[in-house]
Structures are given as structure tokens and as C-alpha cells.
Length: 568
Ligand code: PRX
Image 1 (cartoon, rainbow, N blue to C red):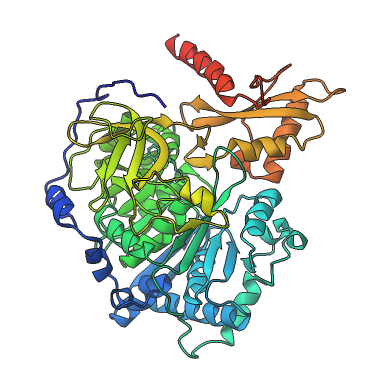
Image 2: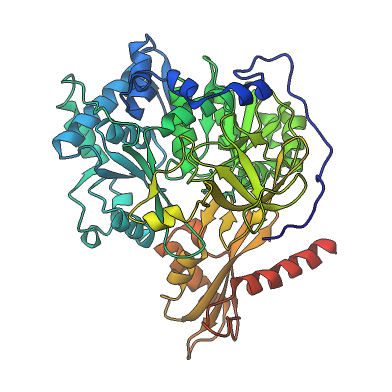
């Protein structure tokens, strides 16, 4: 970790649009007066001690007279679907009844492995309605990635489709009791219409969601979130997403990632937004046309996606994007150029937000009613206290870079790391600072500026990849003897994955061989975890005593090449 002094990168400040109304207008005052009880009071049954996230997202709105309001709009570029809150209640009720009749109960782990689609959202809610912990898996995961997560979590139930189901090695997951293919779940659900309310009432510390996420060492770990998180999701949805009654809200992330679940499903629906789902991969034309077609007003995405749109030049001029009133970003550093691009072309700012899988919801934010300093992730959400700590755990003054830490607890904070309480505890200092592993500094006005990671975690296109997981797969390839994996700076993706490998005897370097290695990782883990660059080396740098591969030496070499290239 570096603790060198730095000055703010930019003096630029972009003021909010004064003609709009915002859900939170008095940031400083709210910071002084806010207590988390206020967030719980905005919920329905939870405010009287009965917790169920699915009820709060859907059923509550139906009970309050919004059964006819559009809850969901879906397109995959070809077909379109639309559902009201009343319809989503009927579907999630009947799915929850099927799950319960199949043995799902409070605390069961129900994995959901489906493409971004209405049923992906419905089954997550149905599992939670039935009292279970929902484990959504990213649709691009391949067999190894699926096995590792489901095995570690002792998954008991799975909902998938005929395509993705092929990637689930059921025989390796002895805990698995039952698998539903989505078509058969749908059919069974018809027989379960109109029976009793399937909602299982839970306590605030009962499980809700599990997301596996990579660390810099070891296999991905299961981050468990519990019901209390919905108060944090709700209030951040209200203030940061700034959901109003008529908003059409689109989050581009798949629910297998924490952004796609917390801010794709929960936060918008807790605030009764009309939620948009785009099925399929990034496609600039489809994205712009979706905004035009559904008149999206709030759009939550990531810097890589914005940069990919930027690279399409004036393509946006072919579309009417005037519905957009609020844009947000997460997952990786948001460079000022991107904010300027949005301002010039859409007439709106992009609001960066910072949080992590482990933190469960927004912690550092740019509120739409406050000034944005391009380059800064914003300021702490009311209710959240952050500090920049030095190596000894002491808070640093403004302008000094150190580790970004957050005073625990807060409602969205993970409950534990699945079957690894020791790992969970390792996130916290004795005086209850949660250590993020990110380095940052704060300016005199309390705005936080991201500077990097203090470990080897890779952030490629906003997706978090642990080098260990990639290295473990690489060395399973018959040609690979050893592997060291790092994130290499990239102007569009933030970082790309670069692998340095040594070869076993009898193999020689060739572009075919490198392609076969890349393909091998893609087929085992997923496309986003496959190295975009592979360099065959004679030897990897290692520690003298333990022989551990020194990723930071590989990274330093790559960084100096990058610096030289960008100075040319
Ligand atoms: O390094 C930070 C980066 O993403 C990490 C968390 O990744 P994940 O758990 O996958 O969650 C991503 C979305 C919630 C952080 O430790 N990160 C997240 N937001 C930002 C960011 N880096 C820079 N700026 C951000 N706004």
C-alpha cells in the first residue's frame, strides 16, 4: 500500500440540474440526522419485524393498489414481454409453491443458472419467497466455475434451462437434491395457481442471497447476504438511483453479479420502478434502441460499456434518447472523459458509485442532487462512515492515499463468508473498520478518489477475477507447466487478463498453442476469465524461500511497458 501525498486530480465540478426534483436534496443534513431505522420504516412488513425481500419487492405493491402497474419490460432484440406487478406476484407465488412442494424450505440453497430473462428474476424472487437463499450464477460460467460454487455452497436445488444445464456437473455435487428445468417449473406452476400464500416470513438475520466472488488468493468465496440488506438496498435505490413513480429503470448487469441482483432486481423493485431487462450480450445498436423503445429514464451500467459506446462515435444520433434523466456507473474507475461524453451527448451527468460484493449495497455515491467532481467516486452515503487508513490502521488526513475502510456494521454488509468465518473476520480491524483492499484518497470536501488495489485482484470490464482461479485452470492444460496471471492496463476494459506461462517439455510456443490455452480457460471457467494475452516465458519470477510466483514483478514489468507506450 502506498501512502504518498497526492493532490486532487481535477478542480472541475459539475453541478446538478436545478430544474429537477430529487428524492434526497439535503446531503449534509441527512448525514447528521439519518439513522437506519428510517430506512426500515420505508419498507412494508419488515417495519413490523416480518422479513421477506420478495414480498417487499412485489406483493407489497400489489397490496398497496399497484397490481396494474408495469413491473417488467423485457427484450432480447427480437421478442418483447411486459408484466405487471400483479402478474409478477402470481408467477412468483406459483413458482414458490412448486419449490416448497419439492422440498425447498427456510435456508435451502437454491441456485439459479439462467440467462438474463424474466424467469431469471422471477425464480430468484420465488426462491426467496419460499424462505431459501438464492444463488444466482452468471450465465457465461462454464463447468469448473459452476462446480466450484455449487459444491462449496452445498447447493440443494437448481433451476436452469436445457442449454445452461449441460454445464452443471450434477454428479460432482452430491448435496444437490433436485433440479428444475425452467419449462417444467413453469408447467408444474400451473397446477399450483391460487392456493395459499407461499411467503415464508423470516428474521432480519436470515439468509437471502449468496454471491461467489474472487479474492486474490484461493478459490471464489461465498458472500452471504441476509434479509436486513433490503433496508440498505431500498434507501440507496430511493436516494442514489433516485427512483420516482414513473421511472423506467435499466441495469445492464446479469443477476449473477451483485450489481445485477441488488441494483437489477431488488433496489428498483423495492422502490416500485418499472424494471427493464435486456437479454443477450452488449450490442450498441440494441442498447440505444432499447432506451428509445422503452423510454428508459434511469440507466445503471459500467465504464467499460460506456467506453464501448463512445467508440461507436455518433451512433447515438440515430436514436431518440431524450427519456434519459439519470445515469449511474459502478465497478471500475469512471474516467472524466466518459462523464464529459455523456454530458455533451445526452445532456446528463454520469454518477459514479462505489461498493463491493461484500458490502451488499452502495457505500460511496454521487447523489443526483449534489455536485459531481469527475474522477471522484463521490461521498459516503448517509449512515456510512469511511476512512483512509495507513499501514498501521490509523486514519489519514485529506490528500493522503491509503486503504479505503468503512466503519462496520451497516445493513447491507455480508453476514459471513460461507463456511469460512475466519476469512469473514479477516476483513475487519479490531476497531471495526471493514478493509476494502482498495486504495484511495479523500479531498478536503470529503470526495473520495480511487487509486487502485493493494492486492492482485483483477478488474476486467468491471468484473472481478481472481488470478488464482485462472492460474489453477491454466496449469490443467497439458502444455502448461506454471502460470502467473495479472491485470494489464487497457484503455477500454480498464484491465485485461494477461497470463505468463512456462511450457512443459515437448511443447513449443506458437499462436495455435496460445489460442488452445486461452480456449481451455474459456471452456472451463468463462469467457471473461480467459486471458486476452498469453506470453510464454522461460521462467517465472518467484520468491526465494517458498517459490511462490511473484505476480507483482510480472505486473511491474507490464506497467512500465504500458507507461512507455503511453508516453510515445
Ligand atoms: O476495486 C473496486 C472495484 O470493484 C471492486 C468490487 O468488485 P465487486 O465485488 O465485483 O463489485 C463490483 C460492483 C459492486 C472494488 O473493490 N470498484 C467498484 N466500484 C468502483 C470500483 N473501482 C473504482 N470505482 C468504482 N466506482
